[in-house]
View 1 (spheres, rainbow, N blue to C red):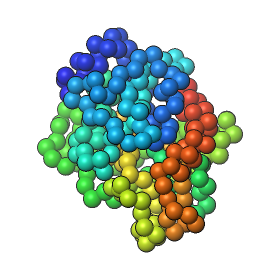
View 2: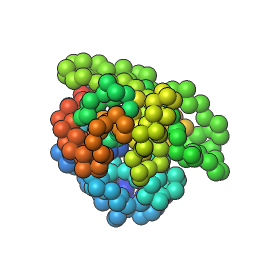
View 3: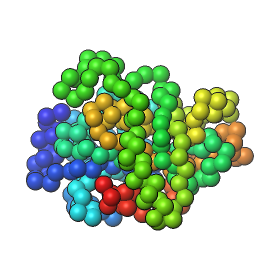
View 4: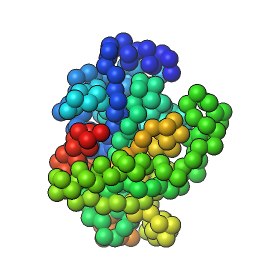
Length: 266
């Protein structure tokens, strides 16, 4: 961790990020438009490398509306074979760099039948259905307590800012529960029926480990899902990553405007 921090600080000099953003599949364009300093993951000591299409693999630092922001242009997934410690490593790095507000974005499947592809959903809560937890193992007391409270992972004040921002911009947003499964397979119709019964509105393969670790460390967390397809059994066609990227492309205009307005209000 110290090697990672030292390398990044040497590159960014006196830039001290206060807001962190994890950009999900197909949503990395925000970091293309705003990027004062760009560091490839592969160049950062002890940092994992992104392998998924739609994840460029850069740590991008930018001054946006007077706010110091660090963006992950692509994340790491459990299904890639990474440990949970690796998946959540960048969130710990952000915390060490000074980030207090974290915006997690993802591409998700719509489980709620009323959600339309390319719409945006503010995550109000999550269900961890990945069969593991990123906090399993020795606890680092310098970062968080052994048994953290998870009653408000997604900070109410940040969700309010997101709703207010969307209303100002006339961008319709859904609100709901995100459930994380391991992937890399999309869910079967029976599994989608199961997660609907459990109370999920959207399903994906990321975000939850990062949110758990961020909350554990005392960070304020906002989650935004881009509903990039209807899940199996709801959709009348088969599912593909190409469809996910295509609908992320359609949503990116509203996504960018919403995130920029949220940053402005933080």
